[in-house]
Image (cartoon, rainbow, N blue to C red; front, side):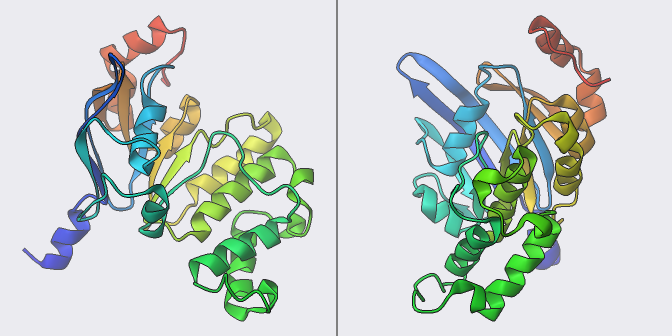
Length: 260
């Protein structure tokens, strides 16, 4: 088989039998997950299913009790969180973690400069570095922030803050982007712009979406993994998941509807 074709089919992220104990509680139970190159993969499950624990394991915030994590062909199980970012695994958070006193433009200038090894050039304003300025302008345009790029972050509408957070993640040039409930707390009037922007993320970035909003999940995902009680209940294409009796039982049992 052609090596390039074989590599393109290899998962960009995979876990093998991940287990995490908290005392006598198994927060994750033998979780094996595979993310294809260019994936639009959603991770869903009721509250307490272990989704946050799994994401913390993937990003290095937590270490597994057993099991392995691979990013491409590299075992990153024990790698520090910032090393995982350097290797292309980037996460957005359920709650905004932004610099309120900076504008969107200034924030992106810092991230882009740091990513390109220019962050130490303190004697030269980052906005005057052509490579940085060009990339920042492109990100502001892509994430519908150009018209508010010079406004302090604390004054941005909440939907724009969420867009900025995803723009920051993309500025880190990820291979794998973990989106942790990107529409959480976003008012209805601001959701459509956010949904369109997420749908238009670059195809070469593999996305794992963790989300409670089933409309977003079924609109975005090409593959879905359902986590229950720390274990994978079922996974497959969206239509199969929507029709799966186990999934319906889990969600109906927790007062949540499954996308029909």
